[in-house]
Image (cartoon, rainbow, N blue to C red; front, top):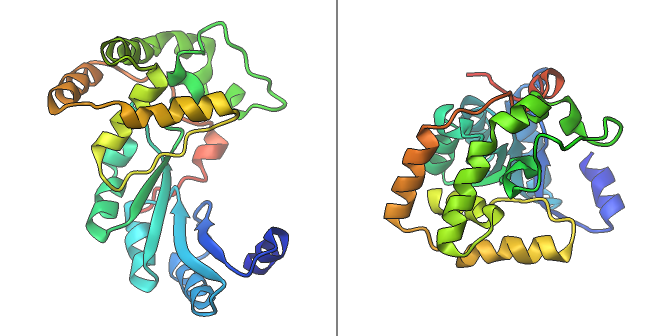
Length: 228
């Protein structure tokens, strides 16, 4: 796979090589060992994991240091705080890369209960969290972001990103960016300052909210490593 990627990319090395989902049929020690060999050969510089459990991170890291862990994390999806993944990254010095930092678009405030998703092109059409009922039920999260955005002169997206950046110094969100306007808006999050008082108030408000619907469908969640 690495050799094929090198050919397609027309390069002699891959800076960060992710195992995009943990394969339950292949011991993570074998995967880490294979990456270690690629690093020794100079074909790969750094090792990343996507959607691993805390236990898998530790086992892999013992064989080949893990540089980055990619997992969904946002004001609506905070499971990395509870399942030990974020703590493992902090302990081991691993960068944490939240995907879906704006709730797969929901936290931008541009989606509501009337939004429909094309089942042929958009996986969100199969996610319970994106049903019309749950899109409506989760609106308090958007309202909270808008409320803080008004205080800070920022958009909901910028508040969502600024909140993530304020959680840990080793967090680097990867928001979806389809055009230059999205890029400029995302970069604006760097100018949003959330004070300790802001974060406490935001945290208190978040604790009172309930997320409706699972983050992905059953098939997608089956690919998420939840081993101990």
